[in-house]
Image 1 (cartoon, helix red, strand yellow):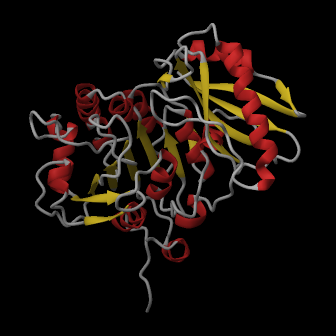
Image 2 (spheres, helix red, strand yellow):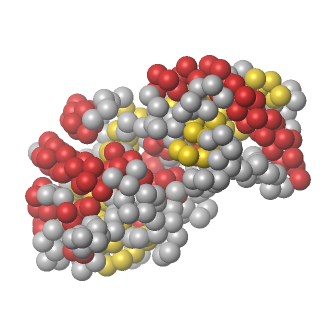
Image 3 (cartoon, one colour):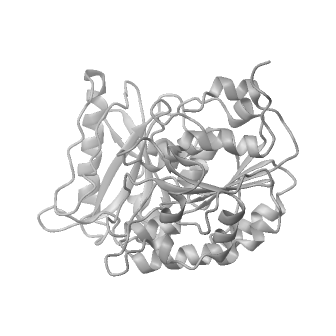
Length: 401
């Protein structure tokens, strides 16, 4: 586990540049018919070339056997201990859409979902309704006042929204209503400490009112809430690593996470090519770039093996635009695995490559799970990626005399 205080001691500013490319949900499982994962099935000559010139391994975002959420998965990639740097999903979404969270506000990440006549969930994402439709539905829910608590509802993207609870006496220690499975009813929100009783009561009343307001708006006829949280305080990446960092992300949640750790969130378009254009246009302004690709994870969650393969191949075809900038360090990995066969996040380690002039190549000839398991970096915690990236960028001083 990387030690933040040690990184603060050793890190130094320099002109060298690091690009951390996160292919969300990258890891997969073999398709039974072929014995190959999505990454192993995809044609990736550019990623393979980086792997040949660099050094590879497998990383565990949280720990072996632990299935990570997106927030702890990314926190680990930035060098923060995911077990002691808890970031609520609600806060990430709120910060990501530039919502002005006030002291005492509690934010929850919401999904519009579909329930049947018995109230059982048939689609957790309401068929991924459009952002325009999400915006219309949020207006139906926004501004409710329950027990002197105002609920502010804002659209995020597609089926996702943020619900911010604003009022006195609210404590975020409550459970979630999302069972994260189909064929069951949404869960009642429960207080996880006596002090959170008011929050749980208000949240349950809000869910019930939302159900009544949405009952004629199939497929988005119910909501699910999770990630109740207040805004945390973290040491920034500039304070720890002496970096001037920027994020290039499409989805608001990841913009929010980047902002919480001190990155400047750059405006960009919706495609990977747009993100690379933003990288090129801002390349001289920063020395660290977090570039995020979401569509791989979305395909995995939808159980669409072929679509996940296709997105990986699209990323690879566009990759020369990044390579041509000649960063001092390129790191490619994911925040977690999302096998299409499981239709969700999993505990499997994620392939990693680090490309730099200062690498000691390890003989790996391609970028995949089966290749990276033989890489020179072995299998290690994702929190060690930042020290390795800093070292390969010659941004760490010697330790000790």
